[in-house]
Image 1 (cartoon, rainbow, N blue to C red):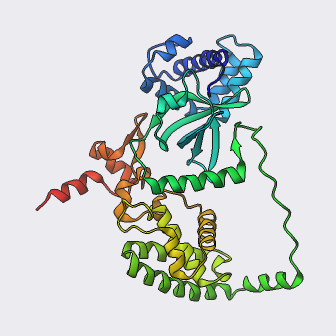
Image 2 (tube, rainbow, N blue to C red):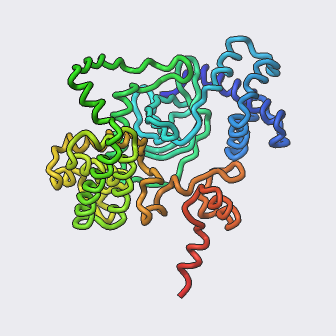
Image 3 (cartoon, rainbow, N blue to C red):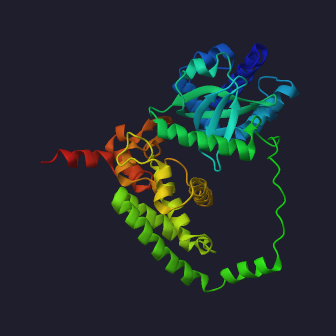
Length: 384
């Protein structure tokens, strides 16, 4: 679904005036553009650079409204002022619905699903029918709706069936927690009401306080040792050492939390949840991966009900804010295939850093932005 044509024309009128003002203030390009036809005829790279500069200098919104160089009426200045609440980042375009297109923002946690309208052309015609797709975009509020700013930069990444299943789970969870968000800013739709929790009985409260005593740290250390034995045994038989190492790391991370969640629940359930979590991040259930395994198999191996294993994994992911393509929990052998490890902005343009000159790769590596220097590794692989 698109904006009404009159609203579409109004958007381009306001946005062109704002971008022309930003360009003059910051001196980005010698070209001057103030009206819709001048702005929309510019190359996408030019429009993107001016747009990105605006969100690095958001004070320009207030300056534009104060100076009002385009002589806009108050109601139109109010629309422009609302764009300070823009959502800038990476999104999965997940689904086309009758009312809007679903964008799932992965630049914020927890995930939220946004219902976005097209401008002059339907988003489906611009992006194509094959979803999901990972894009860089800016979402804007407009008259009680969400639109994008006319620029969508897709990543050259394809997704298998395993990724699509996980995204569907993320979408369902986001919809359950927040609904489909259709407004940005102070007027966001209210969250679903949460049932009031029943008060704990005195006996329950005393038991919980006892579990948070000074001995909890020693108990967690003992538990994590047993957990690692269980996950190591599973990974040795069915997976590999990379999975085992990440499972150990996740168990130790849970043990270090205060209070440690490992002090409650069965060891088998925690072991299952840990393996499931690492498997989900690395698309273990995608047939194109090696090793490959359906996640319910993990539940059966640990003697845990499917819903219990899935629930424990969801708890771990929510507790530690673990998401797909999470660099911290990606197998080293799969880092090359993780788009989040390599996509970054260079001189105002989004690019795969592996295709950049070595000096830029070195700078990114020294800042901890990439796991290694791709050019050096490629050269090393050529040596006899």
